[in-house]
Image (cartoon, rainbow, N blue to C red):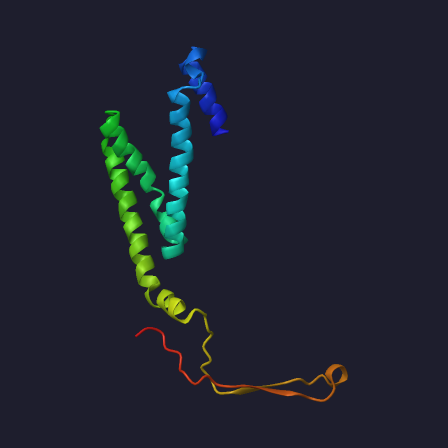
Length: 158
């Protein structure tokens, strides 16, 4: 829906249809390069970050795109930055670093344990227990299954 609204506003603002034509020149090359190469680089970097740090970091850094766009717009296009934009950027950066700080505190031990062991194990904290099957009609006589206790105690943190 936003694309349709933007197209209508754009056609109202620039009524000369020759301005909208893309020829086989540097304008087409610049648009194609910008769309294809930069998007490919962004997806590659996001994939690396997801593999190393998890999806929380990728999603928490996405609001920075607005801040970077505002800064580059002020530098390159000489746009004015208002006080509300600066305060919003400060709030976004504060929230971003709060999430990153909380995530680093949350996953310090669990991420390293999973990487070292290669497997996640459920802790067995009680003594060995027996499970009895009381249904003699289906499986025959009663069976007793013993679950052994783990030799290594489960400790969380150091």
